[in-house]
Structures are given as structure tokens and as C-alpha cells.
Image 1 (cartoon, rainbow, N blue to C red):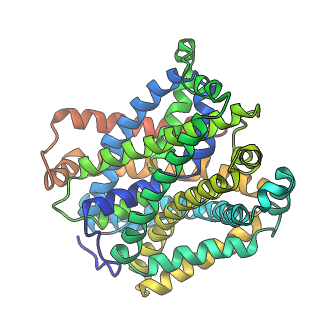
Image 2 (cartoon, rainbow, N blue to C red):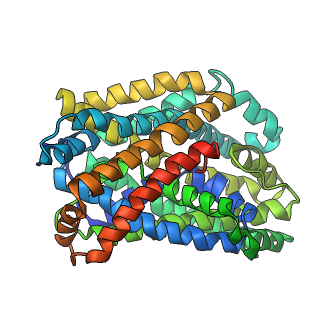
Image 3 (cartoon, rainbow, N blue to C red):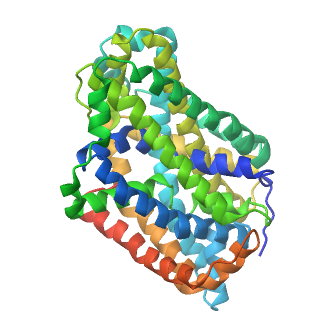
Length: 437
């Protein structure tokens, strides 16, 4: 089933991979991953994390890419196709659930991208370094405190998407994602020469093997890997629908996972040693990026330039993630109601911004994102996994994977069905732990 795509398709393997990496690399890589490494055993934490990344990329990412390319559409059309194969109805209605998760994340995420845009401007002018860092953030992260920056982030994202898949998403991803890696690498190299940076490296890499005996370490590694790869039943699926049939899905999924992991590690090596060099506690969450790091840059020689590099690179990571979320929702509206692409995206952008106005405070954004990432988004991902590997079956996925490479063997079937159980565990444990990603 191939539905008409007004946005076009990716024109190159590199463009697809960078767009997928752009979707995966986000705030969690920057403000949560480094802290979580230190919190759960340093280098020891990386062992379960790498294992879960391998699992989720091998059958999670590949599955969503394959289903999207097979059906040529997004979550609603794909689940309609899967259930239709079994003579069942209601697939489009089920497909609304992962889309609600993606839209919900986009609403909160657009607020954060607006904050990052404001900080980028503040880094250019030097205002975030000359004022009290906590006061600067407190004045921004309040009810209706970031409207122009929030609006600018959403409008810019919609404009990029209106340009189409190749002219907008692919072209901008080819610029923004290499720039992200280059800028973070420059910062990481500079930080390595700061006195006291070695304590940060020890915090990140010194293994505490006893942590591997604690269930919570594995749970948090699982949640971090799952959410970091942007597995949500809609975003990666829609990008898969724009992939050429000749492309290797397995290779693209593997490259996406590797580059996303490198981005997280690079962020850790750039941030945590700098924090330790100036004797500041490596707080987790938004405070690390918006309060702690400006204090670091203010004390660092040439700090203003590195502050510009940092927040510009974070903005690139944020805007490429937001592009994927709004694209998934815009495609669903366009294919369901048959609206022009530009109008569908404008409506989705308006809803995202309008709802986001009421969660511009730190407490509001945090509460909203907890609601979506604990209850809605992982449930949508689990739902798609069940439909993909238990309803449609691994065979159909392997047939699609074979179009661009070698068809996986029987082991794929076993791993795929195990993945469904792990995806269910992400949802259940997220509720039990009040968030794991």
C-alpha cells in the first residue's frame, strides 16, 4: 500500500541517516545521559546501555523503518494496513495513540527548544554570562515567559518541513547534525585542558561493577537507550516511509544507533569534566544545561565563544528532533483529512504552540513531559511493536529488510518477539519508577 507523499523522499543514504540521527539526538543525550552514567556505576553503566541500544536498533528501529517503507505512510495508515491483513478494522484509530505521544512530546519539546534559542541569543550578546545564571533561567521558565522564542522555534520548524523531505528535512539535517558533532568536539577538546577536568572523566568512566548487580541500573539503562533512539511508534516510522526501497534498513538503523550513542558520549565528555573543573555539582535535568553550564562558561577563558558553540549545537539537536515529531503528525493529518501539506503542518504547528503556551514554566513543562513520556509515548511504541511482530509477524519485516540487503535468519524472529516484551517492560517500569528515560 503506497500512499501519495507530497513531501517527497530522501534522496541519499547520508541524508536519511543524518535525519534519523537528528531525530534521535536530543536533550536527553545532553542533560540526562552524562549524569546517569555517573549515577549508576560510571563505565559499568555503559555495558547494559550498549546491550539495550543493540537490541532496540536491531529490531526496534529496523521494525519501524521497515513498516513505514512497506506501507508508504505513517502510524495511522500503517496500523490500518497491519490489521487489515488480518481482516480487522480499527487500525487508524489505534494509530492515533502513538501520534498523541509524539504530539505530546512535541508540545513540551517546543518549549525547551525555545529556551535553547533564547540562550543562544544570550550567548551571542553575553547576557547569560554577565547575569546570575539561576535568575536568568527563573525569569524565562515561568508561565508565558518564553512566548516569542517558543513561537520562533515552532515557526522555523514548520517552515523547514514545508520545504519538503529532500529540500527541508534532508538538506537541513546534512548541515545541522555535522555542525552538532563538530561544535561539541571543539568544546570537548577545550575542556580536556582545564585543570581538574580529570575528575569529570573519572566520574564518567571509573566503573563501579557492584552497580551491575542492582536491577535499577539495568532498568535505567534500558529506559535511556529506548528513549534516546526515539522509538515511539510514529517518528522513525514516518522517516522509514520516505526511504528508497534499495536502501539497507539494517545498516541505516545501525548507523543511527552508533551516531546517537557517540553524540551522547561526546556530550558527556564536553560537559561533565568542565563542571568538575570548576567544582560545580553535576546536577541532572534542565538545571545542568541552563544554570550550571553558564556558570562554567563564565569562568572559562574564551567562555562566551564556547557558550555560543554549545547552545547553537544544542539548538540544532533540538530543532532536528522537533522536525521529526511535527512531520509525523503533519503527515497523519494530511493523509487522513486530505489537506495540503503546508496547511497540515501549519495546523500541527499551531496546536503545538498553542498547547505549549500553558506549559512554559519549568514545573509545567516537567509535569507535562512526565505525563507523556511515562504513560502515553511508551505505550504507543509498545502497541506498534505488538502489531508489527505479533500481528503482522517478523516474516513481513524480514521481507522488507531483504530488499536492501541480506534477509535476516531465524534469530531475528526470536529477538523481535523478545523486544516486544522489553518494550512492554519499558512502559510498566516507567510507571513504577515514575520515569526511566
